[in-house]
Image 1 (tube, rainbow, N blue to C red):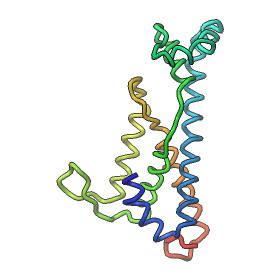
Image 2 (image 1 turned 60 degrees about the horizontal axis):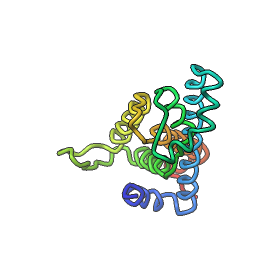
Image 3 (image 1 turned 180 degrees about the horizontal axis):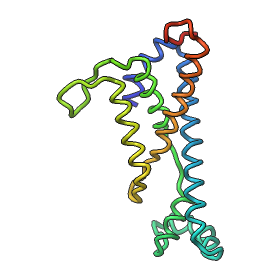
Length: 178
């Protein structure tokens, strides 16, 4: 939420409250959609290597096992159970959309980011975050409970919306007023 306050207030001043809210919501919805698509692909990939009986067992007993803080011993069944019975909650994808928008509107704005002892331009900050999220998402660490592809989804939908606004409002010198 610090990022929403820090970068979002500037975007709201440039775009106005209605356009900013619309952008924030589109990024959040896009983040959720991308995360669900990636989860679906992961589910079908895991399901392909299991027997129908094993899948039925996971569907029948998996949610109760997780409620009791248990899971299947077989790693394939445990992974399928976590994929089926976990949820994605949060606004981080929309926050990443805000970071992207700030980087696109103010690419050469110099920022001091802790713990770096030197300033970094906003465009490199945003690109760095995107690369980190892509790496973390592809690494698929089982102990990682972060929806990395939701973050990337918020950035993708934000990027596409900004490109649309830029094309639609070509005469406004790159800014996107109502």
